Length: 243
Image (cartoon, rainbow, N blue to C red; front, side, top):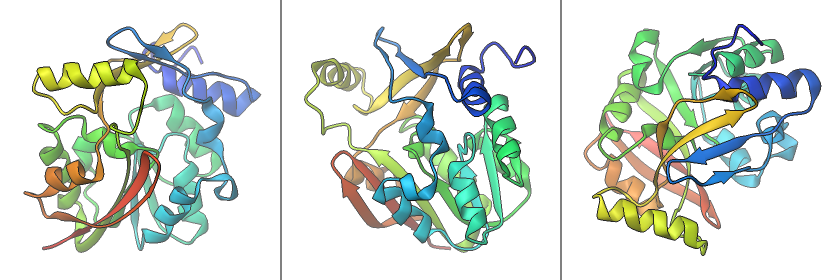
């Protein structure tokens, strides 16, 4: 893995797990919190191992699909097996190397805000594994959602998974949410990076939102939330596009 950028901690973790079946994931928040969110095996699960929300989300995707934040390809592979033409994008070279090795036919290094570079049109976009968070912040969300609108058909569907940040009793999270409010930010905005062995990822913003907050964020875009399935703090939303 010496050819990986030193910042590709997520990709290095994915490669180790793919090749050896042994790795760990550590996520650092900008207030010093360091957590092990559950291990990399979740990124490699087969559909029969998924939570019910993920299985519902896949059912909502139709036609040609863009998988935003595809990682090592668990959702892209499942969509391919269901007969979809899928393009997966991610910022991690290592994760994309794994995705291709596992059989993802079209996996590209690209930020979700830059999807216009694809010069393609999609019938659906999936942002699963809490990846609605890739919008980053309330300020960045309109641009990201606009970019997705520009590469999708007039009747496209956006399938977005997120987590309601209010559903927690952990003081370390509640205090962080309050500091965000004091700074004029949405409470579920987090600044994080991944660490793995000698690899240290770049800091980036990630956004967890309640369903009603998601509705507020898309209110001035071509997208509207038409359905929500929720289980505890986790949920998946089906957004439809109006021309």
